[in-house]
Length: 154
Image 1 (tube, one colour):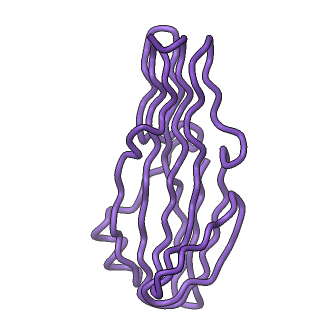
Image 2 (cartoon, rainbow, N blue to C red):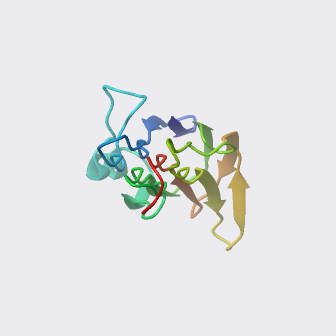
């Protein structure tokens, strides 16, 4: 689970971010999908930027984050949101300290991580459950976990 919220006195937004799923005996894991928070979807980028003072700088598959194996785990995602006015940002997420395990000799997926890139160039790590204040020009980056692989890599 990767839950990101941001807001201030005027705006509030909540989104769930996808990750990679684990592989199985006869299939690779899926990349950048919702696996534990179903029946949800992200706001379209154009609508997000129209309704909130943010810029979606990027949303991509986190290549290589799925665990190796005979069948590879799915890759997570990377989401970059730049803020255009001060807000409070909070994250509630899993697989930040214990990697998604592989099965039957498969390797674990990559841990998730998140940070703030401050407008002045500083980078501040955020814990899996954390909150911070952002200013105009700050960017929050969330890199979601990959899924574990299945079977020993060949």
